[in-house]
Length: 274
Image 1 (tube, rainbow, N blue to C red):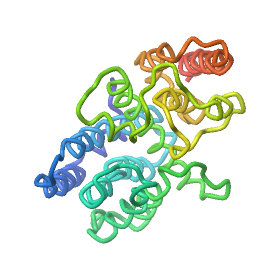
Image 2: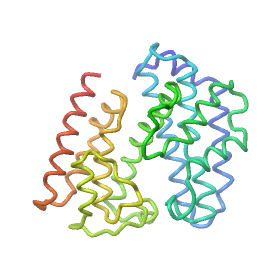
Image 3: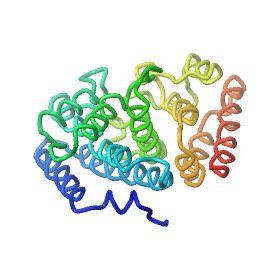
């Protein structure tokens, strides 16, 4: 991939300090019992960072270096609250513990992760971290804050999809924690989740009961992708094809599946046009 002006700026020596800062922070949790899920969060963090970088690079000179830098820094620190969350509660399920985005924001602020950054970059990045897991974003959100938040949300979804597919198709040790302890019944799904798909609504994690509910939710994430680069990456990965192919073949679920299949095709076309 051609690396543009923004990519060169982000990969400066100053940004490398942020990368090392995050790694040192994550390493401080190495003695947490059964810490395999936290090691996954380190991998996830850098995947989200890479996706965010590609989104910013794809936009070239259409955005400022300030917005690009805030976006990628927000991607780097977006899940830093997952570490104290898991240490304290032994789960990533916010409903059973604490809102990890709020905890990530507080961690960034209290540990001064962005102390060298300008006021505007710091404010935009922290805002995006705080909002990245919101079910819906306010229509009155500042335009620049919305942009940075959208970059993080798109990049996060891309890698969560990768993670989910790996756990949806195997019995890895951390599966229950990653899939939020939903029931694994291959032919079961929640009718209200299928209804959300047909109505164009994004289901809440707290409403998921079965693994197939997770698949339906992942499918609906396509409706929230904001950038052509994200859609290109999704279409090229083949991951959504795997998710949809694993859904039950029951006639009652078919309308929801067909809608998601049409959305995937539109995603391919939109990515091609981007």
